[in-house]
Image 1 (cartoon, rainbow, N blue to C red):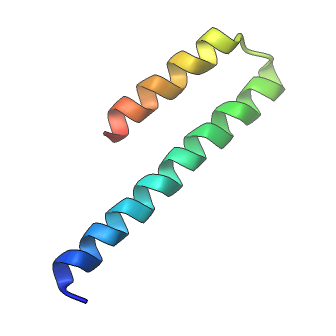
Image 2: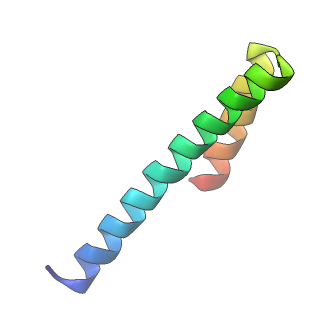
Length: 52
């Protein structure tokens, strides 16, 4: 495995972990604070935009 490929795989795995964390965090926040689905959607889109 070349170093470039290893770095790319690490970035991909890191991105998937971050996205799963965002989804889980917003889901937990929604259950705890009973936020509106529209607000949860906006939070997720904002976080994914920052990650991208």
